[in-house]
Image (cartoon, rainbow, N blue to C red; front, side, top):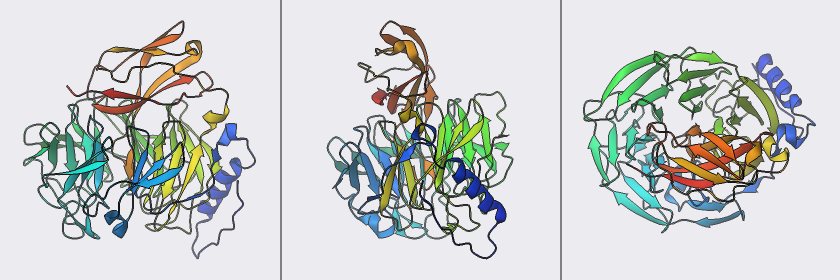
Amino acid sequence: MTNRCVTLSPGVSALWLLGLVVGASSALAQSPSQVGRWSSVMNWPITATHTSVLPDGKVMFYGEFAEGALPPRRWDPATNVITEYPYAGYNIFCSGHSFLSNGKLLVTGGHIASHVGLPRASLFDYLSNTWTQVPNMNGPRWYPTNTTLNNGDIVVTSGEMNGANDINLIPQRFIAGTSSWRTLTNASMNIPYYPKMFLAPNGQLFYAGSLRGSLWLDPTSNGAWRTGPVSNYGTRSYGPAVYMDGKVLLIGGGQPPTSTVEQIDLTAANPTWRYVAPMSIRRRQHNAVLLPDGSVLVLGGSSGPDFDSSNFPVFYAELYNPTTNTWTSLASNVRYRGYHSTAVLLPDGRVLSAGGSQELTAEVYSPPYLFKGARPVVTAAPTTAQPASTITITTPDAASITRVSLIALNSTTHTFDQNQRLLTLAFTRAAGNLTATMPANRNLAPPGYYQLFIVNNAGVPSSGRRLRIPPP
């Protein structure tokens, strides 16, 4: 871990400094098997403000402001080579993005100026490296959120139109089969941009924040909103939210930021927010990444009182274990990753942490599980699987496997992964193979590409294998 001199500004909280010192020192001089290890800093040509892991394992990223009008870049995690993708044809900074079931990336909205969006939408095909513009949306969207439905359609919500607080009130549903839009005319609602939206087990969309009051959106017919449970802390702007097996976790955020964390179980008859263990330090502008072992990795952010307080950086990562409801402080990176930073899970189990405001760099984190012994090996696995089906995973390590995970491909911007989802599969062991059962409910496992991991009794994951759930 690198020693750093921190210059304290007037009014710096002693509690912030104590939390930083305690959290960082707890990871000092420990082995990679306890705290993980960071790569050296990589210099990149543009910022990674929008970052997506494509089905071929390559990482697409594009940048902030004028960089959104440049060609996106492709980073190959295996070779560390960066090349250009084609230009989308307009500025795609501040867009929404998630995947269709065929692996194409739907990019919605874009940038004219701060708080002024575009009505455009396009599909990027990773197989042909081509962009295809689809019909415009009902109005401009700057900071919209995409959410994939159980049949592979995508609902787009919020986004500013022609100025600050000029929100596009009407969600739209992208009909994947016809590349057309259906406007949810009965679902007018003013919710802040880049809302934390999730497909819930009941087939509706769940709005988890950043407002304190949750909401439900019925995406059928002309749409309809209804009120949901109220969270405990309050508003959580620029704090991440993640989805694990029907549960949503809200992590920090707010201005000034909080260290508190809340969880809601959307499979319960009456879902209710409840506090779980807090982080060791308050954070805002941080990222959260779901890992194959079922834990949640939190990286970067600021503990300062302002929008993007780079003079209050948090360099050490933290890991949340939902089973034990505990946090562990991990190794520190080098560069401040705040506003406009992103983080994604790579197919080999490492985590890319990149970008930040005017930050043309990236770092790769290897979690502790990569230093705990030999990795289990998958010698054969299906590339597609239907809901409720069983799949056979061939592995010489079957006897030691304790977990089978499906993690949707990441597509992240502004602290939120719009395509994320972690599913834990039930399975049985036999000599040389595992038989895992896919979720029967398409609301739990919407169509699209996932990474399939097996994890052994030491917590070590295999490399991810690509698996597609087809649409109905």
